[in-house]
Amino acid sequence: MSNQPILQVNHLSKNFDGNGVLKDVTFSLNEGEVIVVVGPSGCGKSTLLRCVNGLERPDSGEILLDGARIDDAADLVRVRRQVGMVFQSYDLFPHMDVLANLTLGPVKALKRPRAEVEAEAERALARVDLADKLHALPRQLSGGQKQRVALVRAMLMRPRLLLLDEITAALDPEMVREVLNVVLDLARDGMTMLIVTHEMRFAEAVADRVLFLEGGSVLESAPPKAFFHHPQTDRARRFLDTFEFDAVKQRVE
Ligand code: ADP
Ligand code: MG
Image (cartoon, rainbow, N blue to C red; front, side, top):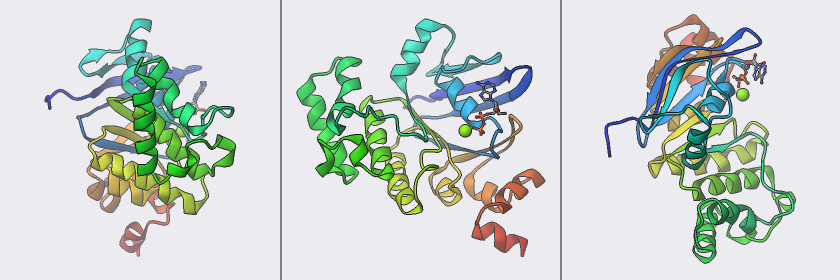
C-alpha cells in the first residue's frame, strides 16, 4: 500500500449561477479508508461527489486521483474506470435481467471474458443474499434488492474508489439495514469509499472520518466518535439534534 492518498481534494470551489455551492473544500482519502459526508440538504454533498466523479467541473481548486489531477476529457475516461458511484435512485436497466445488468460494464467496458464475469457476478450476488434473483428483472425486485444489485454492479467494475450518494434515502426502513450491511461488509473488506448518508448510526459505524458540510464549507472534519459525541460547532450540534440520535439526546438532556 502506498502512502499516497487515493483521492485528494484541494481548495475545491464550485459555483452555480454565481452562488458558491462548494467553498474551498480540502480533504484526502487514503486507500481502505471511509469518509462520510453529512450536512443539511442543499449544503453541497451531491455536488462534491459529482465533482469527484467528473460529472461537474470545479471552478477552482483541484482533484487528484491516485496523485494525478483530473483535468480534461481524457482524464474523465480514467475517472469513470476508477471511480464507481451509486445514487439514491436505482439506475438499473429496466429491460435487462440482473445478470445482464451486472455483466454489461465488465464485458463491454473492461473487455473481460463473459463466462468469467458471470461466475463472479453469481458469487457476488450470493454474498448479498440475492442468489435466486439472477434472472429477475429490476421491476420484480424490492428497492433494497435493487440497491444491493447496484452495489454489486459497481463493485464488479473493480473501482479504486466508490462514491455512495444517499443510497438508502428512498427505501422503507426495513430495507435500509440490508443495504447498509452490504456497505459495512465492503468497508470491512477494505473498499475505499466516500459516502453521503443521513443514517447517523451507520455513519458512526462505517466512517474513519466524518466531514460536516454547511453552505458548501467543511465546518468539521473529525473521527466519528468525536464528531457525533463532541461536535465542535453549534451548527453541527443543531444538525445532529434533528436526528433521533440517542447519544446526542443524552448529552443535551
Ligand atoms: P446536497 O446534496 O447537500 O443536498 P447539492 O449538492 O445537491 O446539495 O446542492 C447544493 C446547492 O447547489 C443547492 O442549492 C442546489 O440547489 C444547487 N445546485 C445543485 N446542482 C445545481 C445545478 N446543476 N444548477 C444550479 N444549481 C445547482
Ligand atoms: Mg444530495
